[in-house]
Length: 462
Ligand code: PHE
Image (cartoon, rainbow, N blue to C red; front, side, top):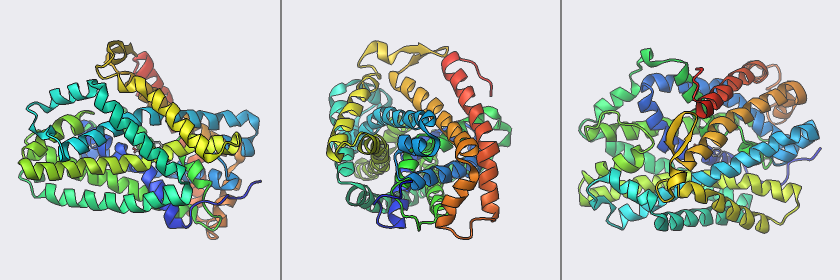
């Protein structure tokens, strides 16, 4: 069996990179509106349960598979489960590729907004909702900014694990926390902020139902970067002496705190503008600019520019991890030089993202798809629904089944125990094994089937 290849220089390097992968647009762009739409504090409560009961064990499983095999997801399943399981890893590689294709489009919007709020006249617009509509439909800027984002991502990945991914994460992650805290402190001083915080933190348990559980679970999975092998890949670059459970705990806590803190930033901002809990994906691009505009020309530029910079930083450490997955696959399995793998993959994924990019008005039929009984969906929605809402729970389900029935939990325990001598016999070992063997497959199967039916047949079972 292969041993870990050279990779991260230290545990801190891995933790920064894995937390970077986890913390992304999901935390800052998606989590606050999911929370606002699903009953505030009640959603938060369910989300945290999903994170620790389902997300954490799956994360530990992924990292352990990666370290054990020293390989990309395809190679990891192949080594541990034989050819008949390797397709599960391949599925992960494909999900990664497709998720990056649309993620990079949203990252491109963030980058464009950062530049045009800081240095252009975006804030002078009268109607920000309409402006975003025109902006997203204009492919000139979008093409340019998402290409720039992909080039930046490719540049970091090209430099390799230590010099690229690790060094970038060690700079970007502290920067992200600092910006986030500074913005929160400012947002909390705004009039009306208290109501926003109260809305965010007061749980309304009457809003809880299985649908909310489903959204929370999906969000938890996406946010922790699980189900497609990003953490198998990063796990393949860590040392045998690393303590996997401790690292996974830190990554989980970092991701959850950034999600929590983003809500603490966003809801006060929205309430300060007297906007109740207007949610939806447009929150960041349609509502926030209006709020920044209301702060005055200079403050708006500074606060707004800083906010979109935060979004770019969060997105970049995630796009890096998404690109590394197919790159590692080509390098390990096809023996491609890293350079060729990075350039090819970045180009292919950028091209795959073009239909998503033009699905906000630039190309009519791609902007108005009908599936699952809903019309007016974009091609980006279609890719996100397929590869993230359905693909990730499927990947997580298959991984927990794989560990439970094929690789076996005693082998998982052996791998974890290498860097954590007290692991065997601990309550944590029992908890992780029970969750991975019995609970995760069932819960994730339910989410997978429910999302599949809901997104593509228009039938809600949860
Ligand atoms: N976790 C990232 C986010 O929250 C998205 C992501 C998903 C990154 C899967 C890598 C793999 O934005």
